[in-house]
Each structure stands twice: as structure tokens, then as C-alpha cells.
Amino acid sequence: MLAQNPAAPAPAKKDEKPPIVFVPVDYELVNAFPGIKFEQPLGIVSAPDDNKRLFIVEKTGRVQVVTGLDTGKLEKKLFLDLTQIPKATLVTEGECGVLGLAFPPDHAQSGRVFVYYSLKIGGVLHQRVSRFNVSPNDPNSVDNGTEQTLITQKDEASNHNGGDLAFGPDGYLYITAGDGGAGNDKFDNARFINKGFHGAIFRIDVDKKAGNLAPNPHPAISLAADGSAFYAVPKDNPFIGSDSHHGEKIDPKTVRTETWATGLRNPWRIWFDPKNDRLFCGEVGQNMYEEVDLITKGGDYGWPHREALHPFIQGPTADKEPTTGFKPIDPIFEYPRSTGLSVTGGVVYRGDKFPQFKEKYIFADYAFGRVIALEDTGKAQWSDETIAQEVGIAGIGIDPRDGEVLFANMALGEVKHLQSKASSN
Image (cartoon, rainbow, N blue to C red; front, side, top):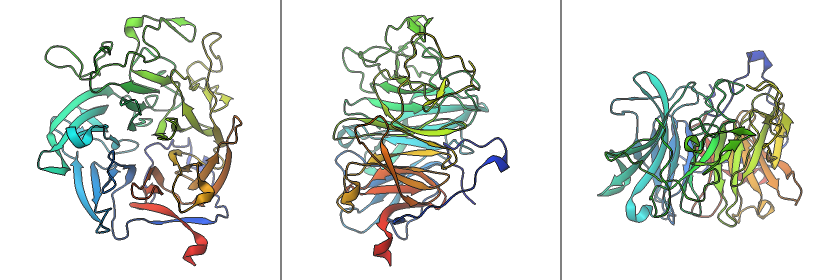
């Protein structure tokens, strides 16, 4: 049975889901680590300047590390286990679970690791971002006793959690969060920058560098004994001091100054391009369209007023787009939900095995299985080519050994790479 995608929206009725249509393709996905299985893998992460290990995030509560990439003697080891949480319960049903992992630039020296996961506290669902440290005697194992929570946001529904983490070229931590779940932005979160940690990409300074700011108060923020947060807000974040949004006046003291970009429904997988620092994002749609965005500082991506390029008329404000202060950024690509139901954001290809895909952004649709290569043609909408098809791709990363693209198939429990069908015959 196909495992549920953490990002996948369920259709209103079972018979409304269109059938999967398979298209002729020249490439296939094959197991990159024969003999190694994972439990619902949804993330593929490397540590900075480390081509010997690869980290696989398992939705069900663990992170595994594959060692021996440099020697060819591959071995799977348990890196982090969150199945038992003090005074709380890990939640893995639906779109919840361990959803994101990121290593800071100084990981080799500091041993720090950042994790996004779902939990219940007193029976109430929350989404959490925490910092951990690896064990002092074993860099391949996290010491659970070192956990320091940063943000623990109460969550009214189990879906649309975002959950990806990535350090940008600026050294700051970027966090994705969906609109709070249910459907049609039921809880009216995404159009605001002064509510909770919802419907946006957030940018925080986990090092608390001199000159950066304390975050505005919020119940979700963990505080030290002196009342300070365990992170700071970069002083150049775009919404600091904002006194209006979408034409409505707001109190600057209530703004979530952590916000980097807003108007997102369920950003499922972001990726920084190391060549030019562009930030790509797969944005899961509601009823009609899936989209891929290039995220920019202060960008508004339209939800819930728009779904990709199109007005959305079922949200909390119906079809009434703001008359002032609303300048949504168009996606670089959209596709209708007749050809896919749940986008999984990807990476730009710069390996050597497939020169025909050089500089193309490769991503997938979890539900229909299309693996798509996008090419920047200099136009607003990038050109697309479906190159492979395999249902269940929930995460995409890069093999640190050779730059080839890797795909986490959550349904099959495997990490795969691309192969020409001709070469397998």
C-alpha cells in the first residue's frame, strides 16, 4: 500500500482523484544503495564538506546515516532516534513525523544538528524546530540529551506542515511552514505576517550574531532563564518594522520578523543552488495546480488569494484579492492536478552522467510519479520535460560523491538514482 505523502492533500472524495497516467520516458529510477532499506524516507541531506556520509530522514521517527561512501563499504547506522520524547509523544500519522534536517556550516567543529518534527504535548499537536549535538565520542550519533527547542508551534490540523530546513549561503537557517492545515486555508493563517509560524519561509540566526535582533514575543518561542530566545532575527529580514500588510495596518511589535517570504500553502522541499544562491521551492497546491517557485527576499507567493497563477476563490477571503500592497510573485512553473497531485521540490543537476540535464532543475510529483526537468529559457515560465516516472518520491537530494541526483521513495523505502532505460537492457 502506498504510504501517505506528508505534503499530499487528500481529494474531497475518493472518486475525484484522477487516475495515474503513465507516459513514455527514457529513464528510470534504480536503487542507489542495494541491500539497504529505509522506513518511509522523505529527506536526503549531506553535511557540509562531507562526501563520506549521507543522511536519510525517516518520517517514522529516525534519521539514518549511510557511511562508507568514500570506500564503497556502505553501512546504515542510526543517527537520531526521536521515537521516544520526554514529556511528549512523536506524531507520525498523516503528514506529520520527522520532516526536516539541516547541518550548519560549522557542523564539523560544533557538532550541531537542527531537526523539524511533529509531536503532541498534553494531547495537543505541535510542530517543533530543535537543536541537537552529536555525541562527543561518535559523530555518527546524536545525543538526545542535548536537545534545545527553538520553536514549538501549536498546530490545529495534521497536514500542511512544510517542515524543511536548510542553511543558506548567508549562514542563516531557513524554515518552511505550511498554512496550518485542513483545506482552503481554513484557519486563515497564510495571508498574515503577524500571527504564528505559518504559511511562510522563516529565516533565523542560530548563532545570535552581534547586531541581530531579538524576535518579537510569541508563545511558540522557547526562552532561556533570562527570558531571551535561543536564536536571533537577522537585522536585514524584510518585514522588520512593517506597519502594514496587504493594505491593512498592523502593529510592528506583533510581526513575525523571522519571515523571509510569505503567502505559501505547503512548501514541500526547498533547496539553495550553491552556484548562484537561488532558493527553489516546491509548493503543493489545493484544488487545481502544483507549482515551483524561486523564493526571493520579502516575496509574496499569493496563497490564499491565488493558487499558482490563478485566483483562488474558496479561501477565507473568497475571491477578494487585496486592493493595495498585494504583489504576488508568479511561479516559474505550474502544472494542473490532472497530471500530478503533490509536488516534491528538487535540485539543479550538475553531475556528469547525464550532460543533457546540466543546469536543469529536477523535481518530482509524489502522487503521479513524474520526474520533471525544468530548463530556464529566459522566459517567465521554464520549459519542462518528463524524464522518468515512479510514484512515491517524497524527497530529492544530491549524492556528495559525484553530484548525481538521489530520490527518496517513501513508499518503497529506498533511495534511488537516475538510469537510462537503454543502459539497463
